Image 1: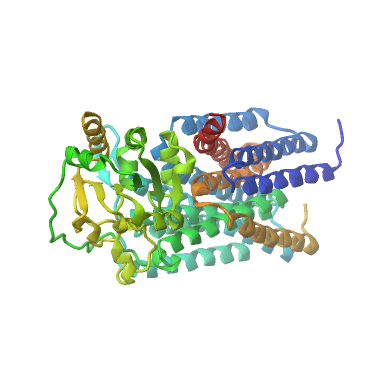
Image 2: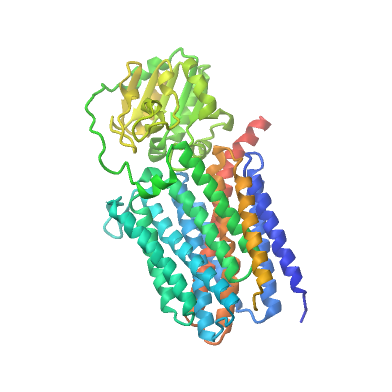
Length: 476
Length: 107
């Protein structure tokens, strides 16, 4: 039998942690991002390899189960990653995130059950406290991540079909104010279970109590939050799954888990705050004050819709056009039709740019991914702060399924949208808005933009309307 | 395997420093890359696969496989899905964003 100094394993793990750090660093620049992702994957491969060697050196390995588990997970993961549509990406990220949280929680649970079964419960105070608290916190955070992520996934989908019946059920958003009290109580109950499990380490019923209370907590945590806030929730849950992995690192006393987990935890949290800032929302409000679900303002004003032929006439002889995509573009999957429109415009020597609001769609960067899929050059995607100065000189702004991110009422600083940074679409010389109706957006606020004299409304599905517009331009 | 106070403090030090590192790394990312970054970071949090490997193996080696062993196995499968799926889906997203850029530079 070969003997290897255990220090070698630690160096291997250190190398893998360094690869993760470099990977995340490189992921932050468009040029190096694919390389960064590969570095992360390499770090993961190295960590698994080191662990497998360590297991071989230290004793018997149940190869059927280890290899079987790795293979099964790889096949399922790869299949999902290849099969997913670009519009389904946010849901998939949420689902993967849930799996990660569940894995951490399951490791902690397996550890506690195995230790109790084998009579390996630590006897000294330090070990008992350190390991049992880590087990408890890993479970608490991990189970919340699992059930919360599953809820977020269904909310992003908007609902689910009952198997065999093909009946579509809208996913509910429900949260009376007293539910917050329940949530806080459940959180403290979960912490109490952690403390009780430390006091009575042999008694596994406290651990099972923790599993139940934290699973319910995850569900109640996401239930009252509206679909519009899901990006923030998924980002926060991403942070939590990292924290769960870090706690698991304490359970099995492994530095690579601690480093990678806490780094992802910090990353997710920063991203969460960036998103909240862009939406002018406080994290506390998102989590505890549900809004946008009910009490929507009734539309009292009306606006006569235009037709694609009229808009095609508008498009003739203009010099610049700014395309403003929103969630509506993702829903109707009309990014290719949008790109075709841009091509038609460019053939007619019109300068085309895209205005990307930081929270357009359901995740930051959602629009970029969709437009990139349709071969839109990266250089044409302009972020909000840069493009806003260009709207006054723009001949035509084409808004596709965006609402709250263009609502001038945000500048007044009042109401749910008050102070949210918006795209200055109202400053464009003329505006075309493709939207199903005049109804309010997620924030539940009427949009003055729709009723301006220079605005033309194309009522209908994004894809149908874009295709109609494209053929009208070709015929013109 | 017994834990000493010094080792515990060392682990907590690593934990806290890594959190600060994460804050610094992430604060400079353009909005364009937020979704791929979230997805990539999420894949890295699948590092818990290491814990799952060790836990499931130990549990299966200790005599007849009990509940703990199968929980460890479930953790292994889920963590692997998170890693493999996460990195692949991130790669797909980035291929679309960065791939177009490269094509344009060539042309």
